[in-house]
Length: 478
Image (cartoon, rainbow, N blue to C red):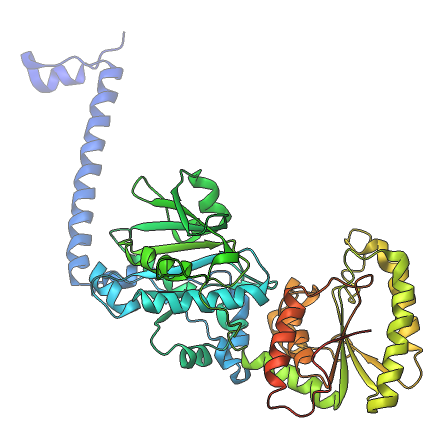
């Protein structure tokens, strides 16, 4: 063991004998003490400097969240004046009280109530009428109507495009001046910004056999409802307080009067009893449920203008709607020959050479693949087009030949909305068919008879014929 006698000489009898190990521990403690003192000095100096700094406001430290509902790719589109009716505004999350949130979105501090038809089972031609109907009901109930998203010829909450991608909101407001409207994006923002989450009543309209509307309470599996309807994307959660009901309606007797009231009147009375902040509507009824008129919501200007461009190019024309799905492929060739003969007859009688062909068959290359539901028709369709194109004195046109929505498609980018046979292109086809000098649809063995698409065209042409003299018919079968 090593000793340090030098300490003895220094301290005498009080000398302390330390081993090297003990001396190392002592030096370590001294160094630690020095470091602590230096840190205290540095911290005091930094704190003093920090007090002199101009600190940013709290709002600058917290990033502002925006919610675009998958519309980020459309910014350039909405900056163009040509599509001014498609404006989507980014909605900021603000630190507001519930009364301030209500006032911002529905102009009321209390009783901010909405009606939201988030789903309709039919395609756009039917869903259009039903959305207008429920908008009228919302006005009667003193509720704000949520304008559901659209896309692929559907009106559903999960769709990609805002309501104004299909429809003219200003024209709708003129038709229903007593109804307040809010976009789905704004509604989502209202819901997310509320501290106290709103109460919900979910109503599922279904077909029934009763003479009067039949109401029953149901206990759904909550998660599928939340995710299938995309309510999860704006934090809508259903708890034990949410009311789920199913209303069975017999559309055959909907307008028959019973005890002084028809079913539609009783339906409205039932809805007026609801105290829920939000009435969520799932609509599986195909027929009109309020009135027996079939007026539709006017379409957006960019659709009307594109249809006008095509109609001006065609001048006088025959519109042909051919629904090929479900038709026996072997009969398509004979059907094409019949159509060719009919077009020649119309040309001879009315002098119309141009034909606009609207069909559910995918004319674009993207969908003409072996996985398409129409793949078994490809060879027959090619023969059909050869027959029609060879018809003497007849020029066959389609949305493909006019490159419809080319400018809009370039701005939005590649999207199924412009590739498929439904969606915005189907709406354009309907408008062109409505305004045609002559309208043809196929006989029973060649085409589906009077579906929702042709029914809407027939109703519109019937009304148009009362004032428009250029129409040569309402509908004819070739």
